[in-house]
Length: 296
Image (cartoon, rainbow, N blue to C red; front, side, top):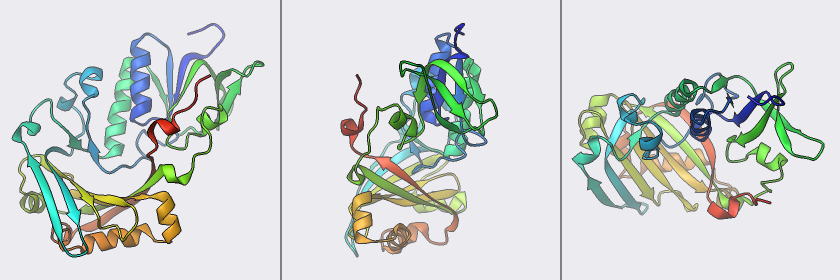
């Protein structure tokens, strides 16, 4: 710890990026604080459902022995839809069902909580239920820490790492991230449908903890984008990823698009009798390098 700062590194955001940054910094011998606004890491996060965790091979050796995985993806499909027809390109590999694995389905609340636990094990201090409200700056304008919604909640550090999501207000406040046009974003919308494991195994032709990842082209009611269907242990994740600018221009409701996708002749038999357990949405950046902050 520096004599003039509370800690060496503050990481804002307890998602995968934040936890991985905290793990790396803590293992380097730095004094690290990881701040999460939710009651636990992952409590406010959602995504489609598939993890391709090759980066973990180096960060957490043999991660598959303990990670909270729903199913191991052993079958990947790309489905092209017209209003009434479907063409599917399907690839299966039993080798993907063994270490080091190609991909897995997981729930973000479980996955993020587990990953943050490794940050704590590495020496990082996790602070939850805390909202970072702004940056602290020196007289010269350098970032020196963060303000939080806690009483006496200012915290100083040599380095602040902003992992606070696609619309990082900290990066904007620091002058690293300008307003980006809606054309650079998509909106991911997902339903989680409950079905017995045995039914999922039978419908998708899998066994044990093996699972399926289906990427869908078409079926979005004319809005630019695509869909997905993933198998968890006893639920399905079905949803769409839609161009944000086109969605607004066409004044189409995303829940109506998902409903239409689930009625498609190629999808309906797979999701039949699924009980809706969760509906969620998240903005996704799509501009790549065009959205990277300019370093000065």
